[in-house]
Length: 251
Image (tube, rainbow, N blue to C red; front, side):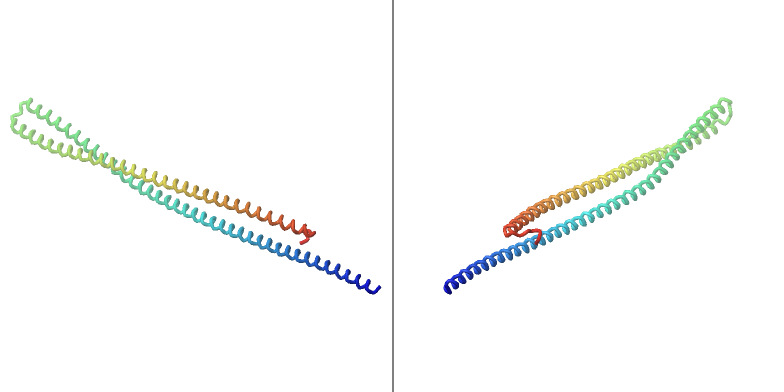
């Protein structure tokens, strides 16, 4: 009988040993799962760090675009100031040239009036001389000499007036041509500045749109990649926990 008891005792010890081995195996698997969970947490932390860097990169681009916008606004203000100053100078110069044109026109009219008066005077003198001769005045030689002298004076005066008229007309034409030239140059310059402003605005808008499009594409790709990786890792760990009879929600 005693040997039989010893035999039963040995069998009990073997069963206990197998049970302890099984418990250690499950414990090891559980620890392994915990390590994998820690790895998942590290991966999630790494993903958060990548997201943080992407956000920082986005903020950096945002600041660059704001700086570019400020530069554009500053350049537009400078162009506007230049255009305003040029317009002011142009108006002042135009006023002066208009005054000069009016002065020359008035001087020309005045010269023409003098020429008309002188011509009328010469006609009157000729009529008077003819009347005196027809009346039989005895001082024919004196009259003839006086008429000749007056004629010479009138001719000289009229010649001077005609020269003055020609010079005034020439100066008026030159002033008018200069005015038209300056006006055209000013208009062309303003048009050129306006074209530059439009080109700057278009370039800035294109640059902004391209930068935003590239940023959105990169963020979308990164987000999809992170979501796929996180989903796969989450599914794998969930399956492993369920294989060991553990509820993932309890961990």
